[in-house]
Every structure is written in structure tokens, then in C-alpha cells.
Amino acid sequence: MSINKRYKRNSDIDVLILCGGYGSRLQPIISDRPKGMILIGGRPFLDILVDELLRNDFRRIIFCVGYLKEHIINHFKYRRDAEFIFSEETFPLGTGGAILNALPKIHSETLLILNGDSFCKFSFDKFIHFHYSMKSYVTLVLANRKERCDGGVVLLNESAVIHSFQEKKNDKNTINALISAGIYLLELDFLRSLKYMSPCSLEYDLMPKLVESKKCYGFVINSELVDIGTPERYLQASSLLFPNGCGDTNV
Image 1 (cartoon, rainbow, N blue to C red):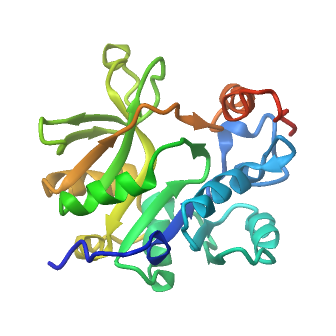
Image 2: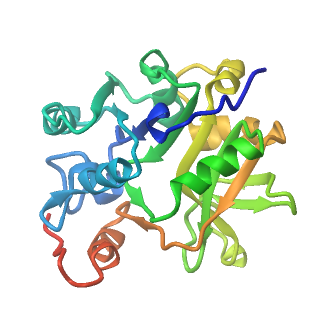
């Protein structure tokens, strides 16, 4: 398997944003749009995520859209500061199924994947260099779990190889473990070799196979992981993203 073709620029790597979910935990405060379009500082959360990608020179962004997808499509289809593509679901495919569904639209052999409801500041350049230097099939950004008890618990060996990935393990005994930030670099040749069919989950179906390959690495960061997956975290997101008080949260 040929992997890790060298890219000279971040713009050579396609970005895929998973934003097709129903967002059931946010339904008490938002029901008229997908959760990625919830407003923070008067702007959709996805705008904040996309602007960070553009600052890091990514220029081809694929949105995996499903629930209330027209809101995302209509918002981004007129922007001209990057190429925006939409991989549409007619029924829920799961996170893994959404990636498989988008394969015909992906041009690069290395793919950057992000969850559309989370954000963290870190060096994309160092992340990509790490991925290539390790000749990794898939590399995850990992953050400190801190007080959270509902994220994917990840364990590394001394060589940064991931040897355990337990999605959303609600266990206070693992409170100091690393947590997936929902950001991945993935080699498409390896994904194609798995031969999974939709619907399927990236976290529950694909990640265990990726971990078994022994070519799955963790890139540890010290940054704060911000997500809007629950009403409580959504309300905290504005102060975390705008610590100087310039980003009031507005539903």
C-alpha cells in the first residue's frame, strides 16, 4: 500500500467536515437548523471552523450534510474564498458512512477530517508533519480529557501508537486519559481497503480496524477542546472562543 505522498502545501489536502447529524442533544435550544449553524458571536459555528482552516491555507472543503442540509448549502455556496463542495445524504449514514459517501468528491490521497461541532487551536503544520513522518494510516488529534466523561478515551504507547480507542466511555476512573478532538488525518488507500458499507460509524466501526493496523497514531495537544454538542457546552463556547468578551452567544 502506497501511503503518505508528500504534499508541498496544505492546500493540496482536501478537508471533510462531518456536519450531517441530527444534533439531538441540542434540540432543546435549536430545532430550526443543523447544529453547525448555531450562532456564536452572531456567526454560525461552522464559519468559525472554516475561517480557521482558511487561515491555515486549506482551500478545498467538503461538507458532509444531511439533516436540514439546505441551511449549510445555501450559506456556503456563494463564498468565493475557497472551493466548497457538498456531499449530501438522503438518509442517515453515520460518520463512517458519510466519509464513504464523499469518496467520489475527494481529490487528495490524504484527507483531513473534522467534526463540525468542535474546535481547538493547534498547529496544523506540525500535525501534518507528524502524520507523514510516522508514515501513519490515520492520525488523531488528542487533548486532555479533564472533567469530561463522554468522549472517546484514547491510550497511546511510548511511540505514540494508539492501542486502544473506546468511544464515549463514561468512566470517571479514566478522567485523566486523552480524548479524541474529532480531528483526523486519514490515508484513503487504507480506508478503501476496509471495504465497509454505509451506514457505519467512524468511531465504532472504522476506528477499531484502524487501531488494529498498528499504523494509527496520536498527536497530543495542550489546547482547550471546545464543542457545542450539548446546551451546557454551547453556552460555554462563546467565552472559550472569545475570552476578551467580544463574542456573545446568540441562538
